[in-house]
Each structure stands twice: as C-alpha cells, then as structure tokens.
Length: 101
Image 1 (cartoon, rainbow, N blue to C red):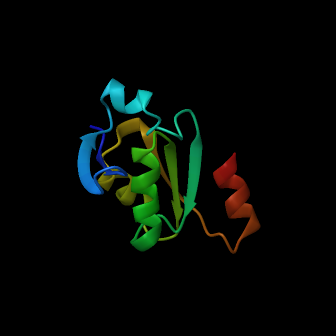
Image 2 (cartoon, rainbow, N blue to C red; image 1 turned 90 degrees about the horizontal axis):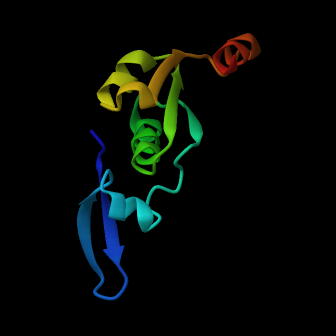
C-alpha cells in the first residue's frame, strides 16, 4: 500500500492529501525518486524513519541502515519489498562495506 502524500496547492494555499499510487499523481511529478534507492542511516527511528517514509512516498526503494533493529523499522514502513532493513554500524567501515554489498 502506497502512503498518501500531502500537496500544497500554490493557487489556493490549501493542503490536500492524495493517494501516491494513483497514475495522475505520478504524471504530475510527485514520484520524483522512482527507480532510485535511498540508504537512510539511522533510519530505524526518529527523523531517519521520517525520511524513510518520505522517500518511499516519493517512489524510492529504501534501505534502513541502523544498529537499532532496522528490520523491524522496515516492516513498520509497510512497503513490502520496497523497504529493506540492514544492521549497520556507520562507525565501522567493514559494516558499511557489508551493507553496500
């Protein structure tokens, strides 16, 4: 299930929610990251998790890289195969290399 995205109409200054999976939304350019992969370090909670959600809404596939249960966080994103959680310690080069491979 694709999340809804919020759109600000510049003419009326009104905010409205639309279903990001609708073809007309994609045609309007709201899926700017379609075909891209975003690696979100620290994505299991807080602002990193919010970024992961937003990147998914923009069409990206997301890798949640964190030391604190990224697999569960990826599951909470409810994005199926478009979100992957990998335990990664960014202070350890071998861990980051393993995540990329």
